[in-house]
Image (cartoon, rainbow over all chains, first blue to last red; front, top):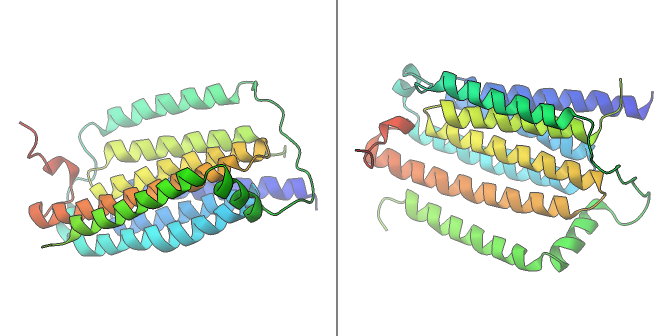
Length: 170
Length: 102
């Protein structure tokens, strides 16, 4: 079979996962079902990363989002879940207006994007050379070293901040 | 079937962004609003990776790593605030938190 054809097939499969998971996330009544749908959506995004030859980000997406963030979400849902909150109204009063506004903006975006693009032609991939992880690391640890260090300070602040927020008494 | 171009990825990303924005705007449950923010940030990452591929330049992937870092920090702090809120008000509905409103 033609590899181009397989790429197309996989793109539509992962796009279906991403969009279907996303729609289920915002429409499910139960927060646990929403979290599971969000995991499906994240798996789809990870697959798209793999299709785009971003192997390092694929691994990060699986480990960090599906392994880390989603466990955090499920844990908090278990901590705060109220059975009566599921019986309550799930959408706020302006939901129709919000959906209409966002759909209008989305249609506009898609229309703009699907016009014959003035995007420069894609740069062809050169076979050989260092792998994806090495190329990412080369840029991250030379050109973007300072932002990388600042990101670690941000994570430290987030760790301390979330402990301070969630703790009963310090 | 025609081959997948960068434009396909951009349209998919715009659709995911719209879904996330709808989720933030219409839901009352704060946990699901936080999940919708994660959807929005993932849409941004799809865009960055698509352009990284388009120009064969890994800087887009480096920026996606930074976006993921910020998303994780935001989720941790947001859920911490949510637990503190739940302890004080016993609710996770956004429109029942109205102490600052008059």
